[in-house]
Length: 419
Image (tube, rainbow, N blue to C red; front, side, top):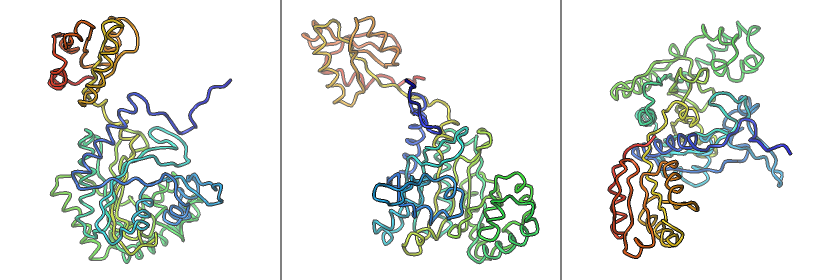
């Protein structure tokens, strides 16, 4: 019989992979809380319209990458390819548009049908922030600052560079759109089929084309800078000023775009050269029209999302303190007392386990293989006297400790990092 394998583009998170994954999420969650963000969890599938209506009927995600199916009731359901649309849907359906600002953190799986490659899977995981309500450039700077602090917390500051751009306001975008149509129309015959289809519908999407021929044409395309209104230019200047004051290094990249109409003003990406072609680690921007697209009122918002797999690939194996305590019965007649002691230690907040079989030597070997911080050896005679042997598996020191004082003695052990 052929053994079952994970579906192409998916993988199991076990051992070091899971530890890295959890390290990224825990660090992000901790920093987001410092910034006042509250964690939300939305369903992993939504009505298809949540994504098709908001990501654009002609976008690659909608036309090529979404996992969409009819459920048994005949409704069209889609596994979420990203979380921003779900968060905005949740804001509207839970009646929170009158309780702004909302500062949302999330972490979870997303799904896209695309060619698996380094750091990219068909089921992948993201962390993200959404700051919903403030229209001021200070909000843009704050979400970027939070992302930067998370990257620093993970030790990635030296591996990434912040690139920013402005998409301007509605008036700026209209003028820029006209300039792009004029430029790309002159090169229409050389554009890819996808880009020719976007020429009249959404020419800004051509700027993000992965086709090599398109990239050569895009290199000389006009930028938005010459088409910004005074207000849009002032907004962009303010964001850059805040970043400079916070000493967050950045470079301007006029080719960073968000092609949908509800995106405006700031667009940004934290990029790296350490992952080959898949260089974006974290990306986001301002999307003042998305909540309205969901049926809510006109509501400004800004946020970002980051791929956990890509971040996990960049971080060193996190140094962790393995606080495991191995409780080892010295003989079968002490097993019941040892099991009761394990439960007592767990109740005191001490990570503990008991070996299920083997003599004293084999159980000690297992404790060392598991990287236990300490071993508590309990025999029938010690149990009768209300004591146990506490062995520090880092220093090798062993001493007798009363069972009443054991939790305090274990909490007092030096927390030396274990690889």
